[in-house]
Amino acid sequence: MFSNMRYIYKIYKEGSFSKAAKDLYISQPSLSATVKKVEQKIGMPLFERSTNPIQLTECGKQYIKTAEQLMNLEEQFANYVEDLNELKVGHLAIGGTYLFSAFVVSTAILKFQEKYPNVKVSLFEGSTPILEEKLFSGELDMIIDNYPMNEDIYEKKYFMKEHLVLAVPSGHHSNQEAKQWKLTAEDIQNNVHTKKEIQGVPLKLFADEPFVMLRAHNDTRERVEAICKRAEINPKVALKLNQLMTVYHLTEKGMGNAILSDTVVKCMPPSPGIVYYKIDDPSAERNVYFYYRKNKYFTKSMDEFIKVAISDQR
Image 1 (cartoon, one colour):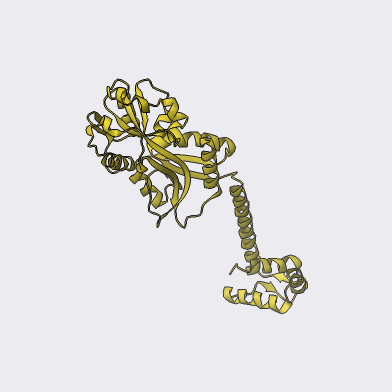
Image 2 (cartoon, rainbow, N blue to C red):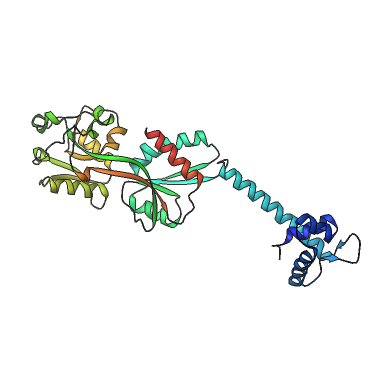
């Protein structure tokens, strides 16, 4: 009914079918036929064709009034889309595990909002299963995680690479035997452990010592088990925990050795209570991605946030 409202509005403004047809670059018969179809759909005429210039009927007046409201709404929406594309308005909902939320995404949010102060950013922190559930339902626009997501459902954008390292309380006797492989927190922060010339420590040197680990059913735990299996050690698990940050702090207190992501080490002030070692194993290296639903429009705010986050890591 209103799909051709601009044609009818042009006739109203010009007061003539012929003038309107000329301005619209269509033939007058074609314009007349279009108006006739609209009038037939409404069930009454829009114009008094016997007058010169032509006049609106009562129904025509209401049609024009409604058409002006619709065109105004269209213009408002077009302005909104333009602002959205320029990130003058908008909302971005991001999710991350506790580690990434506290130490990685949070700093990126600050820098993003400095650049785009009118885009509202919300951050949800939770475990990977909860994050995936909220991403699938549409509550979150994207999440950051090191756990491989189903590629049939989710798209991904590369963020950074992580390395798992062995963390050992500085008071453990095994450090004496392994001193040639010893690394400091500053070495990890400077990515010394990622250099090819740096050798990994033989994990069998620590086989008789207690380990602090994450509970089952997460990427880090699965990788730790694979690393230990290939190293032919069966670690004595002293404690099973939910968060890598807790694992770090208990290792610092001397509760046991741990295999941690270097992200944790880089986020914490250097501690004299922990000694680090490189692990030579394919499972000790993994990628971190931003994930979002397939077939979901990848907004400019999502794209710009990832760019800000990546630049913050350099």
